[in-house]
Structures are given as structure tokens and as C-alpha cells.
Image (cartoon, rainbow, N blue to C red):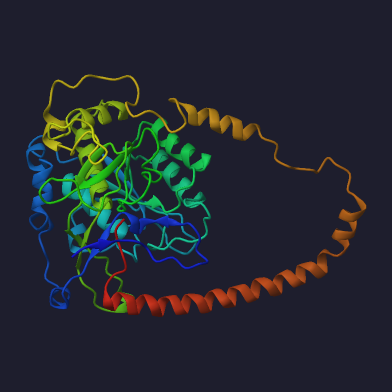
Length: 419
């Protein structure tokens, strides 16, 4: 039985990112977890691969030459499934000593990357680590600078497709910088794919799937019907398999032997699969821009004869048709629009930001109060040192408690790894 993957949030956390809002956890029997037998994940997830027609598309391409960035919790450095895959070092935007994006203590990013590879086995994966777990703190309205920087970095470092498999828990209006970061990626000729969410009770599709220009993904079940936990709305563009699948579980030796795999369901998986199909299209048509890649995806989707709906958008993604159809009408702009209203708007936004005053008051004469504040700076500086030292001690204690709780939680079951 699946349950909505909703990340636990303390009162101090506020309205935060919800990687857990796109996946649903499925409990695995202890005997399966302890067996440590390697699995053929393509065979384990054959229903999803068959449903999107991937194997027929593979007769033309398996995604070679295309880079898919996964902006999430990082991607495990070691796992049998990943050994023969094309995975770059990427980058971590988290504070810490991680040298790159090949760190994932949560499993969400690794699972999404696997979903991409279920659709496009030869695609190159670019890990962009912008979260350390399903619980993200510090942003009162959701996404923050770490996520914005990660999206922009991916666009500047070779991504042809960016998968954003998380949502903002907050239903607030998006930050203009969030819109600007996604617009920037689109302006760099990147296909941006985002999971639509796992909460059918939401009044609207959450950010960033809500943004114009983004391929917002809902889910289908094993029968190809709308997945019951999907968030729906007019912003949904495509659907992908979201029923329970098997994914590689990161191995963190700090806590001893761990399961090699976990089961999960949700639109994080669906967004990864749709991102993989986008990679197949860009591989089959290397001269095709992002706008026409999206046009091909939506024009060839299987709508089951119902046209566009709030549950499935234009329909379920069809890799075979997307790669092999020869009658797709070309477009000159993104058929889904743009986050900031028009193509190239991120450049104008950057110009506006650079024109803003810096707030440097060095040309103004110092007031008497400022001079007095300068005289007291030594005393205040010493106080600041003590405050910082106390904060470091508290943070270290908090980290120790978190590590213990995390170890205990992992012994029960990985905490909500999928959005």
C-alpha cells in the first residue's frame, strides 16, 4: 500500500521545499532488504518502460550524446546499477565539504536519475545537489538561492534537459528570482521538466511545475490510468508512469550494510521518465531546439482520445511516437509559453538587476552615530565571536542528534525519498 510521500516538517521549518511531495514510499519486507541480491532494474520496472514505448524508441536511440541534469539531493557515487552509466561529477550547492554532486544520503536524487535512465539508458546524467534530504529548511516561501543557483549552473554547464523533481510546499506566488532562474534555463535552449506533485487536494499545481514553459508532469498507474495521488490542474502538460517502481538505494557505509533497492511511487519518477524521453528526442534530432523538442513530446502524447485534460495534460508521454513520428509541425517559440512572459526575458531581468543601486553609501559623510558605532566596534566584535561560538556548539549538538535519528529512521525504512 502506498502513502503520500510528505516530508515531516517541524514548526520551525516554515513553508519549505517538498521533495517528498512528489514520491510515495512503499514499505519493503525486511527479508527483501537483507538479501542484497542485485536486480535487473529494467526487468523490475518493465511495466513502466513498456507503457511509454521506450524499447521501440531504443531501436533509433538510447539517449546518447544528451545531458540530463537532475537538480535534487545528489546522486550516489556507488551502486551496481550506476556502474556502467554515464554520470558526471556535477556540483553540490550545499554548505559542507562535498567535492561534487556524487553524494546522496537521501535516495531521492539517485532514484530520479535512475528513472531518467529507465527511459534513456545511454543519456549522460549531471547531478546538481541542492538539498541534503527530503527536509529542506531556511526558506519561508519555498525554494531559495541554492535552488536558483543550481538551475542556472546546470543550464551553463551542458544540460540539454533539466529535471526538477520537487515542489514548493507553499502555495504562495513564486519568487521572481525563481521564475528568472527557470526562464534563464529555457533561454539557454534547455527543456525544463518538473514533477507536478502527489497531493490531489491542492488547489493548484505547485511551483515550479506551475510555471509557463515548464513540462509539468502528472502520473499514471500500471494500467495507464491517471494515478490517484497526482496533483491535477490546467498546468499539467504530460503524464508518465508513477506507480510503484524499484530504484537503487544509495550506500552510506557510515551506518553499515543497507538495502540495495527501495520501492516508491510518485510524480518524481514520472518526471524522470519524461525527462528521459526528452533526452531520446534530443538525441534522435540533435539539431532540434528545446521548443521543438517540447512540441514533439506534446504532439505525440497518447491522450486516450480525450484531448488535453487536467489529469494527464496532453496525454501520457510516448517515446516511440516522439522519436519516430515524421509529421510533427515545427514551432518558433516554446509552445508552453515562458515563465517571464517572453523568450529572452531572463537577459532583460539580469540587466534590470545590474542597474539597481548597490546601497553603497561610501560617498556619504559619516554621521555622529556612525562614528560612535565605529568606536564601539571592538566590544561588539568580541560579543559577536562569543555568539558565533555558541551557535557552532549548538549546531554540532543538533547534527549529532540528527545523525542518531537518521540512523534509527533508516533502520525502519528510508524516509520518504520521492516527491
